[in-house]
Amino acid sequence: MTVRELIQQTQWPTAALPAADREITGVYMGDLLSWVMGRAKESDAWITIMSNNNIVAVATLADTACIILAEGVTPDPGVAALAEQKGVNILCSPVGAYETARLLSEYL
Amino acid sequence: MSGALSFHFDVDGENFTMAGQASVQVKKNLRRLGLPPEVIRRVSIAMYEGEINMVIHAGGGHAEVVVAEDAIEIVLQDNGPGIANIEQAMQAGFSTAPDAIRSLGFGAGMGLPNMKRYTDEMDIQSEVGRGTRITMRVLLEN
Image (cartoon, rainbow over all chains, first blue to last red):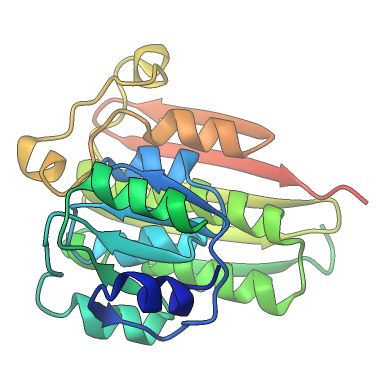
């Protein structure tokens, strides 16, 4: 499914949505950025609670379909604007990482 | 290496939150050259890890990326403290990063292992008190 379709299903708010038509083909969950860089696959939805600028670089380089901030976390100031500029989608899930992943597995 | 294309970057050691700029730019440049996506991904991830290392440990440095016919070569050079025990530094999970860096999601001890994992060749030359020079190559297969 695409990021846009995921948002339609979940009604999760977005912090940045410059590439809504990106296809999501898998899910990766993690907060240690080097682990994410090493393990996340291209077009994964990446679930994390990290909210600083560096997540935009990691998502760009690992080529994930979107970042999903779990637990109601919102991006740090400036992160949303940077994500828009770099073409990185950021969604904000109000529920925990496990529940976020469980919902994704229903839709994918 | 005649006719090889090269990109040079200065990595700013002062601005941690903006680290990764050089890697993102390299990714863009390689995309423009039409290189295979998996090669671009490997080069940019390896370079990002190196860039972050230079910012965390060495106060910045220089990066040179050379696109040759058979490979992409990344050379990272810094004048930081050097690596006392390279074998130990290469172990997954070993890290000397401070807590402030860990709270940003780095310092998991995966930087050098990821660089090795994503490249075909990697060489580390380091002298304590003088600096570190890392050369990595990602081969282009036809």
